[in-house]
Length: 449
Image (tube, rainbow, N blue to C red; front, side, top):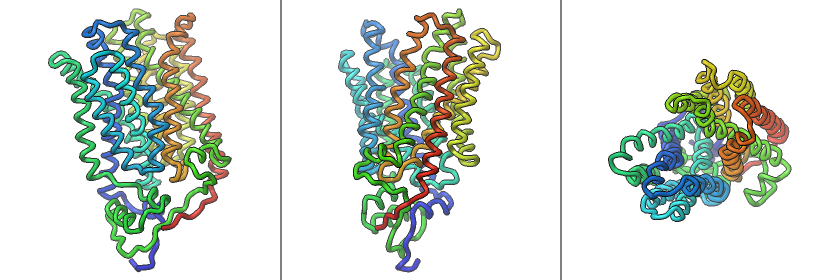
């Protein structure tokens, strides 16, 4: 290249084929999300053994079970957004190291209070991982395949949850519940060592934060596989921000509508997903269905969700992100009504549950892939992490409200028909936010180093 050449980073990435290093980055992000899924799910598999071994009641252990989700919400908002100040790489390394070490320490807890505190701290680390893998990968993959790659990355969460289940089934009866936590700690700690050598910093972040041209050139050359020795400047066209703090950007006039639309959409989606998966087995058991059939039917939700995530990701790249996500949520609402009307004794129960999982989890994963593009680099991790943090309140409400509704006398049909309402709200919210984004997102400003 000529010594005077300048590169606009977003166009440079979008116009090139994926390099080996970009594919490696996608695999590394998938591995982080897989470890996240393992750690989030592990206590559910260990709960019966710990309750029996410690001689405690289920409500006492519920204190432990609730600690990690709260930590996840706090971690997403606080630790997740910190990468807009300190960089994606540093925060991801700290996050994976933290939940690896804390999971190991949890195996040595002696009381429910100690374990709850360690799980809360583990949740802080887990909460920072998801928004930053999303942000970093979105900033390094081309626009034409971004949604599909991000959606595929998120399937790592389901795989991680499944893997730790198989590990627990093998190790629990042989080596005790502590051994499963040791396994769940060693994997992220080993991954952290790999990440230290292979994980790049975001070139977009470095331009916005005014890092040196030499450092940006070195990192971008390694990731893209291109010879950038002649480049003397790097630029980035993005939406202008009037605020000086990343958090303030979310509530500025140009971004607040899309911010609240993402929050509403994510909250409602998780409300539906967690209420469905948390209470469906109980409702089936109350209808005298066998435990193994109840487990198999509920597993169809996760299976459908994994396939749905990939299909919705492909549709987003081809037909438009907001339109595809809204369609998934709308179809999810229709399938929830069909599930309720069909009843718990329906011969098609497992198939309809799979369709609900396909639509709702597919839309939810698509929203994870959509959110990074709603914010400029200056506040991207903050926007994604706050959406995830606020949305976690939906998962907490969904997990807890099912018992309340059942105590009010609501039956299977009523609960699932009513759940169609938040699904439709999600569809409307994403379309409203996208209309505002299309109207205000056409103006850009130039960052240059």
